[in-house]
Length: 252
Image (cartoon, rainbow, N blue to C red):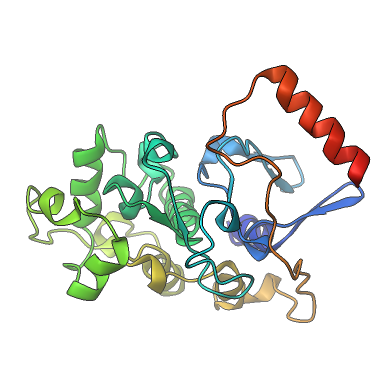
């Protein structure tokens, strides 16, 4: 589990495939659909991350709030883009609450859910609907503070959470009795309601749970933001996408 988790964290800093290095979080890109079925693993426990159909550049939608590499990495989204993002069970609270502002934290929440699933051999929050998913999540988290609520940047957050019983009746230690203190500490730092307080991929690699697989001298990052040629909210025909791809290849 630790080896797989360390690879996933490195994937979000950089991903080396064949002769090319693909940068995700270090290039200000978020995957937005991280789940077990999108993680490919071979018999030697080497992983590759798949399905970038919902991936998005934090720099491409809104320059406001996008701080660049090493910054906040925040992007304001068109409402139409939030209709479907990630499978329910691995969605972060801000996505479930209709936030229009995403950060790299959406992927880190999903990563926490996946780690918990590896430990328990079952999904952590197998919600049947958006409200049921939120109910399951909020039952394991402390009540969000005013600062936490503001971090979500959703006009619907308070109204939705008011429908949910805020009495905390479960702890991660109750749900994951087989988890040791170190893995629970990492989980608690990933599964934080406030996306700004979640660990980054680099923070995770330095955590005691994963540190033995981390070489602090090897931290390749892209050093600039990845901005796609075509905006995510632009709809083109297959022919137009193909032509644009050919033009992009020719210019590079």
